[in-house]
Length: 222
Image (cartoon, rainbow, N blue to C red):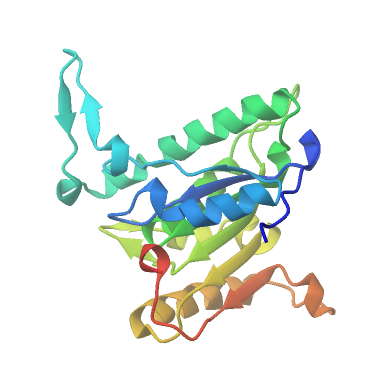
């Protein structure tokens, strides 16, 4: 029996950005994206630069050059924030058209995608506010799958201290408990977040959730 497809009105539609891990691609999220869409959410899973169909760059002379992923440095990875910002801009246009609610934005990131998700959320909440209209501050939830603290010098440590990250956003961490390296990284990140949170009286109100399925499978490999 096919699952029922939920339909929601524009401002009830949650926009979701799915960020794959290193050496991954947008198709890693095909199954998850399909499930979320059937539940009435709007989903975009981009190929981050250097991955999938975003593995080339157009030069000033019009020629194309392949991006050598193995030679990418921390500054190149940090530039992926622009890829996420482009997706957010698309959702913002859809919000202005009444098709989604940008103020319910959720970002899911796997391994390096988790670093990117945290850093971009901190950026979104750091936008300078103007008297006439609100800029940024739209991310409401993060889902970090097998998160790692740093990769090639690109780290999420500073962003974890941002007020929005450590106090305001709902955050879920998911890691296969049998993978010792991945679970150790996730425990460290969870511990830093937990120290800044107020424990809710009712567990149902928890805005920091740590899931540890009994498996060795992680992010794109799962």
